[in-house]
Length: 168
Image (cartoon, rainbow, N blue to C red; front, side, top):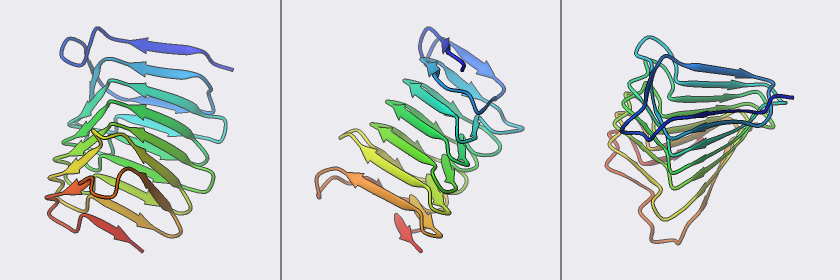
C-alpha cells in the first residue's frame, strides 16, 4: 500500500512538466501545482486498487487527457482545473468512480468530461463549470453515468462547440 503526496506551492508557483502514472496504488495525493505534458497525458490512473485525491491542481496543455481514470480507479478531484488538453477528464470502465468537486474543464480540444463503459462520475459544488470545449461538455456513453448533484438552475455546462450534455 502506497502513501505518497506530491505538494507544490500553488498552481501559480509550481509547474511540473510531464505526467504521472499511478497503477494499483492507494492513498496517492496531488496537491497545489500545475501539471503540463504536451506530448502525453497528465494524470493516468489505472487499476482497481488505485485511490487518488487531486486538490487545487491545474492540469493543462496535455496532448492526451488531462486526467485518464481507467479500470476500477476511485478518484476525487477538488477545486482543480483541466484545460487545453485533448480531453479534460476521461473515465472508463466498470467500477471506475470519479467525484469532481468545484472543478472546471474548459478549452479542451475534444470533450470536457467523457464517461464511458459503466464508469460513474459524481459532480458536486457550485463552482463546477464545463465550458468552451471544442467537443461536448459532458459526454456519457456505453452505460456510463454522470450524476449532477447541483441545484437545477446551475449552469454546469455551457458554450461548448458540440452539445453541452450528450448521453448515449
